[in-house]
Each structure stands twice: as C-alpha cells, then as structure tokens.
Length: 119
Image 1 (cartoon, rainbow, N blue to C red):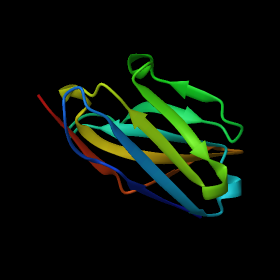
Image 2 (cartoon, one colour):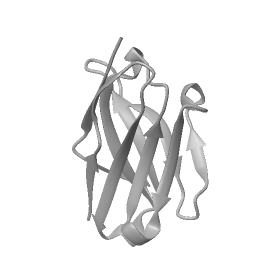
Image 3 (tube, rainbow, N blue to C red):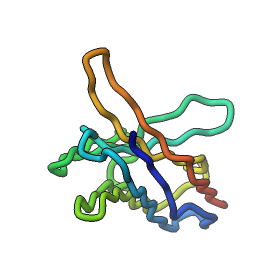
Image 4 (tube, helix red, strand yellow):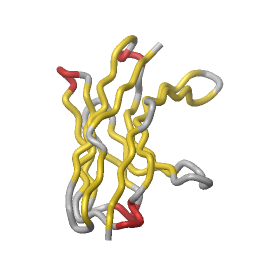
C-alpha cells in the first residue's frame, strides 16, 4: 500500500502562484510514476502532469509553461509549481501514484487539496 498526502492548496488571486506538495509513504518503491490531477465538481478528474523516478515529466498541453512538476526522491515528495494561475484553475487537486501491474494500472490517490483562484 501507498499513502499520499497533499498540501499547499489555498486561495490565490489570478496571476498568482502556488506550490503543491505530495508526500508518499508505504511501499513507494512499487510506484512507477507520480502525478497530479484536478477535478471540478461535476466533471471528470483531469490529468495535469506526471513524472518518472528518473525525473522525466509529462504535461497536459494546456498547462505547459505554467505548471512544473518536480520530485525529491530522498523525501519521497512530488511538487507541482503553478504560476500565472487563472480562475479556471480552481479545482480540487489530487496527487496520484501509479503502479503498472499485469492487469493494468493500479492507482493510489491522496485526499485532495482545494485550490481557489479569484478574479
């Protein structure tokens, strides 16, 4: 089992920045990629970014240049730096840990952290 705990959400004005953190514990060596998703109430959870253990990132096109994912393997922590935030970035942000097994992906999720961007 893997436990994920997010922090760093909050209220920010448009154009501002936030950095989210996700601390992983448990069987972290089993994780293949770590990532961030967000969800607006009533909508599907949306992929934002992921990173491999060797630091290779992948982004949703619409957040490239504004969001940066990074990791500190010694701390088992993944970060999401979000700059130039817009009101449409308002959502609950979730940390994801993905492990690939024979039957497909096995996902672990954090509890989510609210990000609210005011105009």
